[in-house]
Image (cartoon, rainbow, N blue to C red):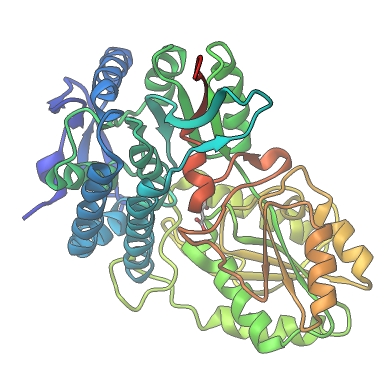
Length: 479
Ligand code: SIN
């Protein structure tokens, strides 16, 4: 039986190895130590760069069909191991089990999709002026890629990067978040079981992200950096990657507005803003962070939304009835508390929740009459808190929605098709859900504009990030 204990103290390069130092992985629900993870540092990172390069030389020459077969096996193994993956995730970062199971399927979805896409990386034979030349655009893998993933989706953010990389013929080195290394190690173990060649996928847990990231980003053999996390860290990594002019994908912070127009179907709007806001206890980059409702509906929306929030079950993430588990750590709780206190000091009214519930638990919280300068309307809260604000016109709603440095996801609730088009076109965001609070899917483009990032993950767009086009001009010579 595969379990986290067997991966204690281990990291994966060309084989499973151990470090002298380890760090504890603590369960947010209980504060208990779940396991001790290998604490990798610069030496392991340099070794990983070497392994990634050597493995790449062989992996890039395998056929797309062979890579597709391995990815398809990995997909099946992830699904076959749903329970251990979901339970590990729930324990190491607190995601409610029913959502954790959903994430296992979401994560497998990327692997399944890119298993198929590997075979559809086509080049072009294109016309030129000279009749005696043949011109080709040949897609090739960019080279070894280094990925840094967050704790909020310990599996899906890994497969969203590693699956297209491997499908394209790149090797992949992963530094998982220090809060959730175990899920990533299990995933890598399944890749090996699927037959993934040594060194194609490596995992380096660490308690000191900079110690691992620094050498890998500086290494010229590593050709691509892909990061999901905060805008603040993304800026630093972007600057570091400039020294070796790496290809880069950044999926950074969000501050998603939900706009509920006067013609919205209220049942749909309430249900979808609930799903968007309280997914993973509000700890996603695309969670509704600001809920703008047309003044004619705002009281009814707030009443129904508050009632729905009160029906959510807060508790042990391993209990199948739980909707909202603990937040990931004390800083997360402190940030939510700071945002709520600030809004209340500015005159906001708490209609439900509003007080930490002990340990790392924070109940679903709804606020109305939130002042425009409240912190929660300016910064990403990353917790189960929904501020509701009234607006009077479409122009005002769009202005409020766009008044941020972020541009990841936005949501529109309306039954008017023309309004749906006009507003979604005016929103400065990479993703717009129209009457849809959870638009993410393995086959769809995910990514932001402005300071929410660079590049797209998912679908055919996601594999492009791991390919570069080689132009081959073939002179035919005399006939
Ligand atoms: C994220 O929060 O970064 C990912 C959310 C998603 O894939 O929907």
